[in-house]
Image 1: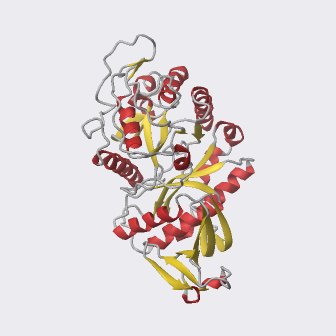
Image 2: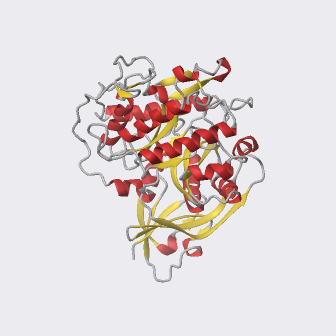
Image 3: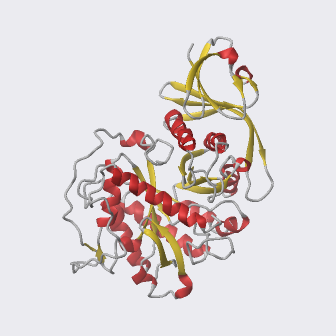
Length: 454
C-alpha cells in the first residue's frame, strides 16, 4: 500500500460491508454499530477483565442452514450483496473492546459477529493491539498514525503494547468469547470465529514518502507481538488459525522488514498473507509467484491468502478492460497456490465489473482443486510488477463437476482434447451463457468458462 487513497479505500470497503449487513436487517443495534471510541464502559469490574455487557439476548437467525465446514473451504470475499461469497475481513482494535483499562465491553464486536453470522458470513478478524490508555503509558506523539477503522479514520498510537500481559489478557478473553466451545461464548453465537490476523502490514511504518503508517516499531517488536498473540490464541482456541499481518507487497523495503524475522516468525502463524494494490496486467499473479519464492527461501510451506487485492488506480473507476484482468489474476493466483482472495472494490464503479466478480464466485467459489492444463506467463523484472499471463487453461474441480477457464489464441482444441466432445457450455466473464459446437469456440485474451455438455 503506497498511497493515502488506500486509507479511504479500506474505509470504504469496511463501511460497505457494514452497510450491507445492516440493510439486510441483520443489525441488533438499530442499524448503527455503537462507537467503540465514544461510548465508555461504566461498570466497575469484579476482576481485572470483567465483561461490561452480558445482557444481549440471542436474535433469530436469518440463515436457515449454514455448513461451517463447507463455507470455510470457499475462496472469495463478500463484495456488496454477492452473498454467495462468504469471507469478510474486519479490523478491531484492542480498545474497541477494552475501552477503559480492566473493563471489557463487547457490544461493538458482538454487533460485528452477529451481523456477519446472520448473513452467513465467515469472519477474518484483524487484531490491532493498540489501546490509547496503554499506548499513553510509554509512547509519545511520534507513535501517532491515521488508521482506517470500520467506525472511521482514527488518529491513534501504533506502538508495541506497553504492557504485553494486559494485551494478552484481553486477547485471551476476546478469542474465548467467539470460539464456540460453550464456555464464556457470546450469547447467540451460531458458529465459531476461527481466523485471526495479527495486525495489518506491520512493515508500513511511514518511513518512505509513499508509505502509510500502521506500526511504529522494529521487526523484532512485531515478532514478539506475533509470537505471543499466536500462543495466546491457540491456548484459548486450539482450533483457531492465525495469519501473519498482510505483507504490503514485494518491494525491497517490505521484504527487508520480514527478512530478519521470518525464520522465527514462521513458527507463529498458520497462514501466509500477501497484498496486491494497484494491480494491472503486469501483476496478474497478485504477487503470489514472488511471495512463494520468498517463503521457499525461508522453508515456509503454508497456505497463502491474499487479504487485499485491488485493481487499477484508486482514483479511477475501473473500465471494462479490467474485467479480463480480474479474471486472469484470480485464476492465475489460485493456480499458483493462493487459497483465498479478499477484494477491495472501492473503484468498481461499473456494474459490469461486479457482474464479472459474481460470475467468478458462481463458477469457482467452491472448487476443491485446480489443475494447470497449459499456461505461459512472463515474469517481469521491474519492482512492483510480477507476472503477465500470455495464455492459460485451468481445470477447476468441484463436487464431481469440472469447469475450465481458458484464454489465449486459436481454437479450444489447442488446450482441451475435443475428439470425443460435441458441445460445450460457454460462459463469458459477465455470466452470459450459450451452448456451442466445440469446433466453433475461438479463444482470445478475454477468458471464458467452459463446461462439457456431451
